[in-house]
Amino acid sequence: MLKEVTIGKYYPAQSVIHKLDPRVKLAGTILFIISLFPYSTAEVYLIASLYLALMIKISRIPVGYMLKGLRPVIILIIFTAVFSLFLTPGIDVVFTIGSVHITRSGLKKAVFMVLRLIYLIMGSSLLTYTTTPNQLTDGIEKALKPLNRIKIPVHEFALMMSLSMRFIPILMEEAEKITKAQSARGADFEQGGFVKKAKNIISIIVPLLVSATKRAGDLALAMDARCYHGGSNRTKLKPLKYSFRDFAGYVIVIFYFALIIASGQVDFIGY
Image (cartoon, rainbow, N blue to C red; front, side, top):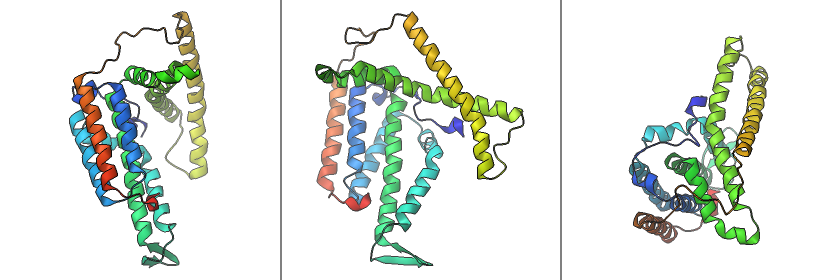
């Protein structure tokens, strides 16, 4: 299961999206996420579906690899659908199961909530699949650079985000190794009830936390040994510069967002 977690991993490929400036991809991801919340209409989600499918096609990332990233959160998606379906009040009852009434509003909310959650994950994952942690750090730092004027440590903030994303796949691999080691010692993570499984997971979490703490300490020592000092005076090996391709990317993103606004009507029933 842990091997199926692809969030935070970089997928190398030769595509236009991979070559875009990270600031363009950050802006595109943020606007795509924002576009999903105010509207709950078929027209809006049809446009969002076409836009997301086009971006995945251009990025040359296999659809199967994208869908693989949804497997670890499939339980969350199911719970979201069930709660939205059965706990949404309304007078337009479609059918009844015992004393539980399923309304048209509940069906609508369940569908849009599931789509919203899937698109949020896929859209965010597309950013990390096509952008290396170093590029993402530089993009965040460059985009938030004006905040330095009000004494906000933008460089430190970007560095923390980058390190956090780097540690996701590393900790997943470490958890996989610990699970195999514990299984070799007789631990059974498949049999037994919920309480037993929870107790067995402790044998993974404790050494994983110890390993994460040790890795963080080693990283701090390595940065200190190399005389690392954050700040605006640091130079970049590959400075970010906009090209025609990046401006075209901005135009496409803005056109998509304007099309969503023109096609949608604010409908908070989808929340």
